[in-house]
Amino acid sequence: MKLDQRANIDNGNDNFFSRNSNVNENNVANNGSKGATYERSKAVDIIALDLCERLGNRDSYKFYCKVAWRLQPSVIYNNLEQALKGREPAKLFTYLCKKCLGD
Image 1 (cartoon, helix red, strand yellow):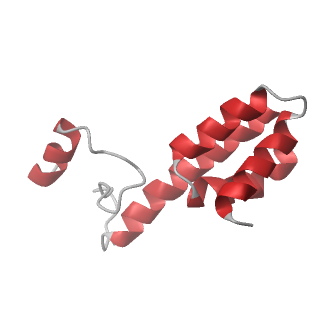
Image 2 (image 1 turned 90 degrees about the vertical axis):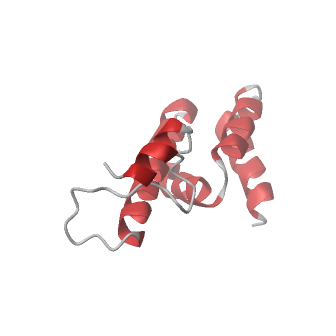
């Protein structure tokens, strides 16, 4: 592990969504941006699968990936918390996210 990566971990700055995210050292053909994109895409996939499970709507996986890619996790989970209080959580969540995305 490189010294600057240790500093990021020690400071708690190992956020998937930051532009300076840590790069996978096991990737031999790593040019820096590929590793960051890979880490971010893993985080997007985890969030999208979590949304599918919590909302019981696996058909909207692609939309949830779009949401996870474009919105901050705090906004996503705030919208989820509000949606779970409604009568139709999946529809309300979609409405709230589309409002945030400007779609």
